[in-house]
Image (cartoon, rainbow, N blue to C red; front, side, top):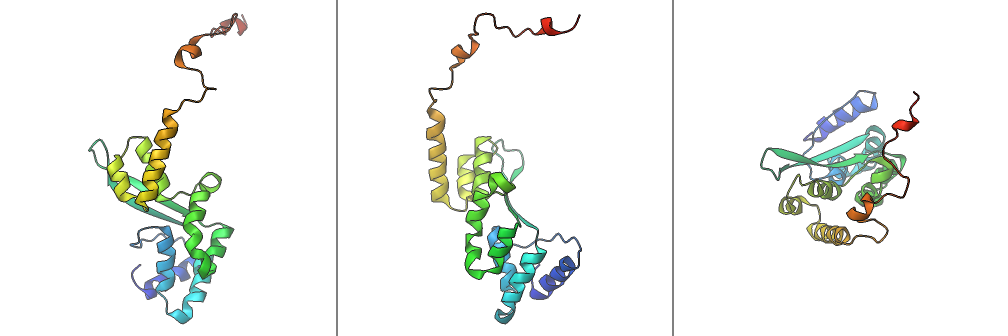
Length: 184
């Protein structure tokens, strides 16, 4: 969608119950919402915000990154699902900037995620390198801090976790063989 006429047509289709899947060249989900609204003349932007808030169901943004193993690319995804709170944030111009924080905080409850959250997952699963993830992050300094914090936490083994040697020691009378419980 590259102009207001196309966006208006797409929104009319969505408002009348049609499934619409489209692309828009933006760096993230919040910018996508802002770009759609800004395509309309200033006097129509308040109505555009209302229309977008009612018609939109989700925004999925992607960045394709080279894989750490050198074979192909991995998609880093930012996911915005439109909840009641998101609808309100889109309608109110002053709250739209807070969408990014809402996405980050809604990961567990709604399954949303920011690029940086997904980049941390890709990095911890060794799908992309640290350098690649850092270069693709939305906020490199915050991303570096998150990685340092994660690495610090992973080096410290809590006292409540048994070591590998302790995990193999079983209490007297304990067995892994439960075949004696099966009917004969």
